[in-house]
Amino acid sequence: MYALRDKYAIAGIGWTEYSKKSGRTVRSLASEASLKAIDDAGLAVSDIDGFVSFNFNDSVPAISVATEIGVPAARYANDFLSGGNAANMIVLTAAAVIEAGLAETVLCYRAMNGRSGFRLGGGRDLSAYGITQFTAPFGWITYPQAMAMWCRRHMIEYGTTAEQLGEIAVTFRSNAVSNPRAMQRDPIVMNDYMASRMIVEPFRMLDICLETDGACAVLVTSAERARDLRRKPVYISGGAYGGGPDQGEDLFDAIRWPDHSHNYAKYIADDLWRSAGMGPTDIDIAQIYDCFTYSIIMQLEGLGFCGEGEGGPFVQGGRIARNGALPLNTHGGLLSEGYIHGLNHVVEAVQQLRGEAGPRQIPDVETCLTTAGAMTCGSAMVLRN
Amino acid sequence: MMSYAKPLPVLDSETKTFWEACRQAKLTLQRCAQCGHVRFPPTHFCSKCHSARHEWVESSGHGRVFSWIVVRHPVPRDVYASDVPYVVALITLDEGVRIPSNIVGIAPERVTADMPVRVIFREATPEITLPLFEPIPE
Image (cartoon, rainbow over all chains, first blue to last red; front, side, top):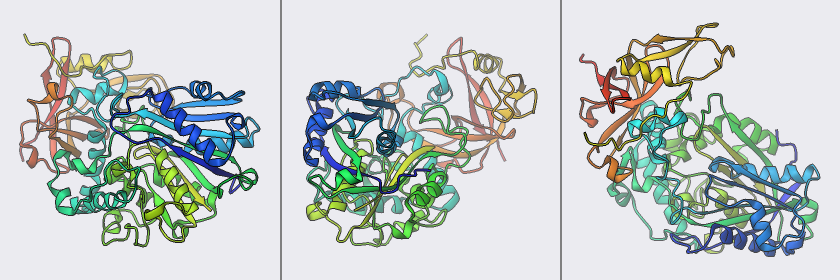
């Protein structure tokens, strides 16, 4: 269990423009977000001595970023080969690295040309080796197709409806309207959702996240040091990573997963809440990994915000809206802000906890949950100010 | 004949027997020779008892639909444009394991949860035959 409650903090954040076509190298995007996070913290490049990132063979190694921005002595670098499930785990890893004395000031970034370059959503290799020899030959190839299979199971077991998924899409879009970073800022209503094109039943176009060129970064250092820096520290109160048994051979493989109505979240909930010394009722707002609308429902249930099977009704009636009891994805999420693979949720959490989210600021935010991952493994953190 | 554009399984040391049996119109599963656990997909070790010894047993080929999707938007477009809409399902075989496949011989909108299905075999290429599933008439 994460045993470093409030001992480490996020002291800086940075991001590039989120677009469909950056026209730039992934390395330059990573470097820009990193330089901005360093500046945000009021530090110099020479203060950085560690990097943690993750990629899907679609990014650049940390040492190349350290080289481009001129870090004189990187003492730690770790490039996880992973999906969105790692987007919170890299921040926890940064804290662990500092605790171990391997570095003092660690940059966490995710950078990708996710629309103009390698497209995670549709770009899987059609040669069906390994586990994909049992999926791809049947035309089961893309992530929307993977997750739609999970969503259908929840509908079978609990009667979850298109309107409930639609409420998530509409709510997150309304949050993105006032977010200058967001790629999709035109408001939508339920009729727009219902009329959006069916891609893979039960998913419509508006159930599926964006594809984005861009990068973001967060800078982690000790809480003690963070208190002396430019910005109000955002403390890492708790965190967890993992999933259940039979997570499979890659992110697509859920052949052996026992129960597709529940994802990794139920398996990490105890660790998460015990590490933070908090529970769901202590959380003011949450940025929950939303590669698809449906992934929100499994995580709300798994982390204990509602009972099993109650996630559909839970998101209805305005509860997750900005003025509701549990505002979710106040930046618009992966669905409407952009797909920086979940690290952009951490950036938004920091802005909300600092009180610098401008017109989309939720009043009096003291705690924020972030999550990362949607299927058989994932990570989550409790952040506070 | 027209070249086959869809993904084809790349056989490896663990899966070769499964696909060769499909060519003989047999759906086979690994059964641990030590503890009897039946498993799919094929692996070297049994996850229950870690034995590397196994035998291949023929499945009844019968199962039920656990979950399913209807693909409307073809990806890649040029490969699947003439196939949509098509159904991919996770099928729970009578032996207790789940296997992904297509449900054929039924309109996509008529597929239901727990629907009983049985395996049929369709030759994709001279080397590869795919196990598909069709509804069992009530």
